[in-house]
Image: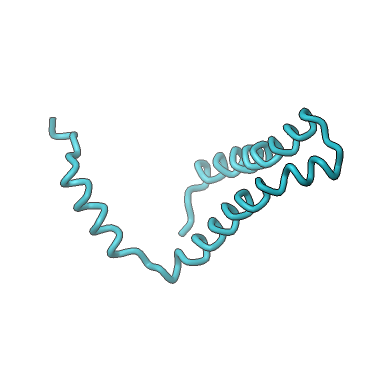
Length: 90
């Protein structure tokens, strides 16, 4: 029972941690994540236009959409192994 983390304790720890965040160091990472997220949000509505103009089939459209996830997976797996092997660097 000593291993349980109750909601009030969790919220307290979370708020204390949030107060100590170094915004100057996190800003570039946050900005890059916003840019990556916005590219997905911007390209999704444009895809029907692209499909029509390129005369893509449903399968080809699926390959285009899947390419992002595949590239992310192919990049994340080797780098995750490297991080586990060599450790995280600040």
